[in-house]
Length: 296
Image (cartoon, rainbow, N blue to C red; front, side):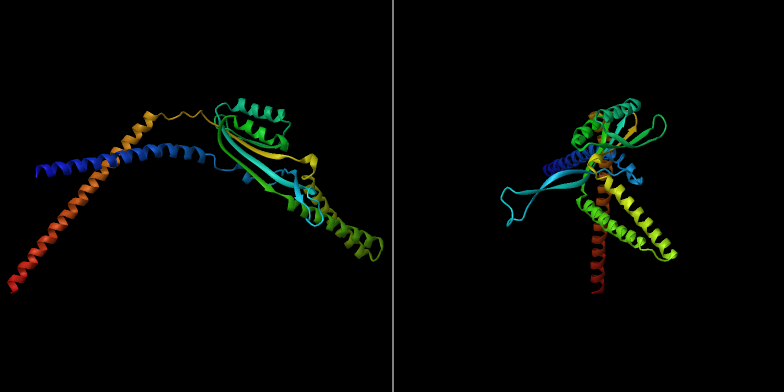
């Protein structure tokens, strides 16, 4: 009996220690994961998504297109311009806001980049600056890598969207509108009623406005206007202190003791409830058996 009790005691102790260690390890690991997740989520909002009419920057590169196999020699390839929009979004945090703000503008100037949009928000101690910067495609990679070193990097995202079809559609639309305009001008030269002349003139002005709008859109695709975009957001804040392992272990231990105690109490009362129910069932069986004998 004593040996059996001792064996059960050791088995129960081993299970208890194992559960305690698992809870402690879980809470310690959660502390690292949760702090990293919180740090990222603080800067998840995209400032530029709420602003309309931001400058669109496009770039191009030569891509090789194979000609028809029947009409081309093995080495004969056609070169075509691929138009694309490439954007890097960078978010950083700094405790030296003025110094880093000047550094951003100095970097922008050294790369011959252009600040196309600038917005400063907040008061000292809680300031923000948001910049939309156009950069030459050949300098894009080095530039955004340099900007990541300013302050403490919180988030970065790079997207590249093909705009070749959009560019071709705009050109096709321009040609179509030019033909319409030419036809209207020819009609105007033939004369007619004053009312028809006025209506035709209004139509010509409307078509010319459409053509001008297309010219502006296509102007963004011109070689001299080719840029990639860097969206840079910097937030002011105190330098973050790293949490020591001892502190994390202390918090994890306190949480584990609390949860383990609750678990033990829960298991105890659950076991007690089951025990009482079993005793009750047994008593009911005894009572039932007695009733049967009496009835017999």
